[in-house]
Length: 432
Image 1 (tube, rainbow, N blue to C red):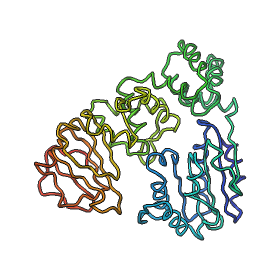
Image 2 (cartoon, one colour):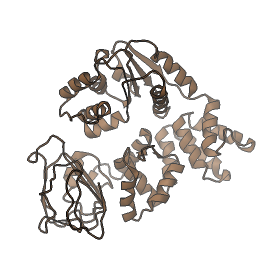
Image 3 (cartoon, rainbow, N blue to C red):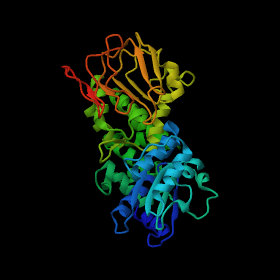
Image 4 (cartoon, rainbow, N blue to C red):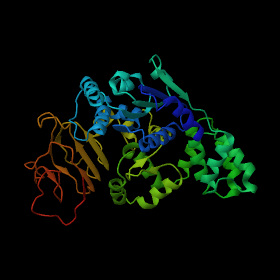
């Protein structure tokens, strides 16, 4: 990694006063995000002070799920947490320009895959003050083709020696394999194609496997050219409860706070403490310094492909849905949902006999939306098994209530800035 850091920092040339765009390009699992994080931490801690430092991760996934305006708002909040939310792309571009004009900033945009993403988040060097540095990581080099002045660092796979060391750290908890395991460790490194992600996950997996079974496992790893298929071996080794936790994280909880998810898993008897520790030990997830879940995008894509394969033609028959269009079709039909999260929608109607098994319900509206534009007006919704209720980013006010003819549950809700009711229920769930 040190060689990659040195080469990238030469392109950045921090001492120069110009504005530089540097792209880290490479295949999935090669370590682009790790490299970007190392450089980000070094520059933020160095004497080369920046007015603002921002690491915007998972751009590709966030853009697909929430749109470019959401990404623009995320970036603006890094500049000013009290920044008023923008509601369209053009306003976002103007506000970003105004926020960073004449300011020296460090921005990392991780995992871009489309030209429009960089255009609308960091469109032109003239947006930024002298000395600013914009770093982009991507698998798709075409998304930055034609941009003048962009410097590209092509990240290759690790050297064999460094790859063996990384594998050994996870498989043996030491920098090199025991002499009796040296040859078979070399075979694993070769089978993983020297990709850091595959080495880390396979090393963590084999750490829990008897050495006399390694040979048969390596044959399976080597038989797959696709990285995701190699990673699938680790998923298949999980127990049923931990698989459920893993797939929930894949679809709903990347970059989300860990404790709230655990409340739901406890209610489902998934034994979350043991499951999360197992996923960590298998290097399938990590817990950030902010106590949020993190996983590599290739692992996330693997999990979602597992769910898609549950039923290729009928999404409503899959165990989890994350596409807005798919959710709309099944919302009122499905009675056994345990997780439902809605953003910027009008939710109305009679929900009798629907959502009876719900454990997690989150409903949020746009901060600038009026009550008439986005509202929650439902009848006969019985949330008897609810564990986590999130109404913190909504237009719900104190005069909106859980009435006996509206929503029948055994507690009141709390919204930041509002007043709690006088009565306090005995069995209070986790309120956000």
